[in-house]
Image (cartoon, rainbow, N blue to C red; front, side):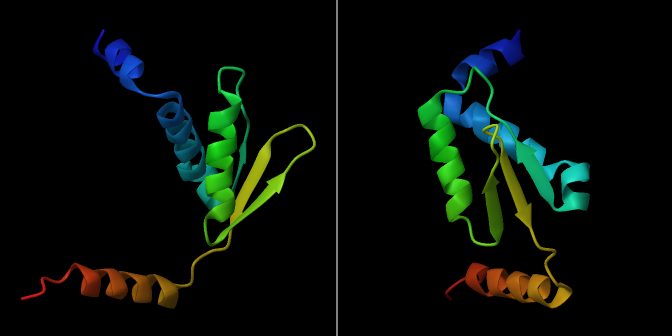
Length: 98
């Protein structure tokens, strides 16, 4: 019953974002460094367009539109040095200003 109430609280964009995130973060997609995302009949067109636009605008992602309407999202493996530098940058930003 609680899950039903939680689903009702989620907006269509929230539900689609969670579904896309789950697809991208799946072990298979992480191994392949790509995910094929498809629009469900229940996904409003404006919500789909908005989220696909966000993917297109995300640095490091390649988005390829398929003939059948699906979207193939892929990314390159991040190098160890890049990961360490990004972690250091985040740590510096997180430091207290005092």
